[in-house]
Image (cartoon, rainbow over all chains, first blue to last red):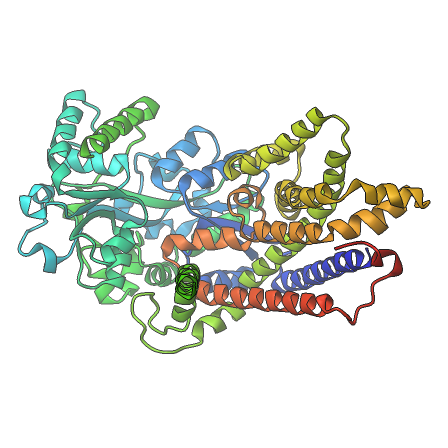
Length: 357
Length: 275
């Protein structure tokens, strides 16, 4: 009995000791003060030095929290119980949040640096007039390939994927919009096409791709491609840059017929506690030097024009990740097609997956 | 006979290699200056430095430990009471019902438990953070601890308590001097099971963290989206070494106690209780 009581007391003692240590560290960092700003962002999606710089400049303490998918973030924001001041969702999630009245309209007069954003990336279908959101990073969907394994196949067109030499050598990312969009693009239709005939055409074209597809995979696609498990993959440009960091034999291309371009944007949720600070932070992130430093750290493409000039030439001049306007004009943002059409896309994608065996 | 033993030993070694290889692989690369887990380029301690300088990460580690220790201590306390109640319940039917309810909580998926906690806490107006994480960890640890304690209660011969009562012990005395010492191993294993559950739980914790409060599993999971940085390797190595130290410490403590003429003298009341 004595031993039990002693053990119990010892555990409590250690726990409270640690708790005290934790609160000391917390207050040393200023997390418990009143002037805080809570940011909810993707994991490892900002240069931590920038947060420090922002804290020093404004005296606001930043609490930085991370999520790993738009859906997870949506659940947290919708359910409430926790306060976020700035959140960084992707395009379709913003459309959804807008519909559900989860966002606060931005005061553009407090974000003068908004002028730095390339006009190509403003006023897009998921947020007309950028009433609620400001671009953070952007990218494309394209083909990553290993020239050593594919030989002289030219991947500048989606049709190259149907080449019989690629038998059992392609990884597809597990996304209905991405794969259906790719098929629609290869037929010169829009990634947002809702015409039933076009969709069926796309499905039958996809079915013909089956022998070439090795697997349809999730995030592990990065590891598989870096380890040369297959020669070709359909991926997002952000993933592509990471894969190429790990294995520099690979190359990335956005096919001519067009493709999807995606955005991660900063928004302020309805429940924000520090709206003033949130605007300050957004404006801070849009500063050319800051955006450039962040783009260099994260490795995704920045939509900030003056920042591009500050980036080293081998980053900003890389047309794979900063394609010229002629290509980006052909790229499309995913429209919110509505629940029914999305379900139909998913169903077609599922049919393709089942057909594949 | 000797041959047979050899195969058995080989099998055992193989199992341990499979179990420990990933951990050692991870530890090995935490010293890699190359920055990836593909090629070992050179020895560096940079990632350990990075971990020790990252105050946010250290706060998160402390949070994780505090939650684990407190929640498993509270859960074990509740579990002892619960196990006693289940054991005492008169009819076989209610006993089975209670046990089944306990088991349902163990097998039900973490995501569902997490989501329901999130809904419960937001309806009840409990702010997400320390309290919500602690409460949910206590809740999912109790059934596990109950399951570890119950067998010890069932093994205990009822004649022991009867004898104690006959000799004039009060209810409280029976509990503290007879029952608790007998089920002590169960209580400790319940506590340690709860501790490990709490340390590595992701699914439930993910739903109930908020307002700047986070634990290690949630943090690592969201960082992994960009590929696991080697500083996570370094941190994992530190935690692994820490656990090893704890286990070794626990082992030596037990060693000393199980010696026949132990240094720790048993109290008179406990001396007669068979172990």
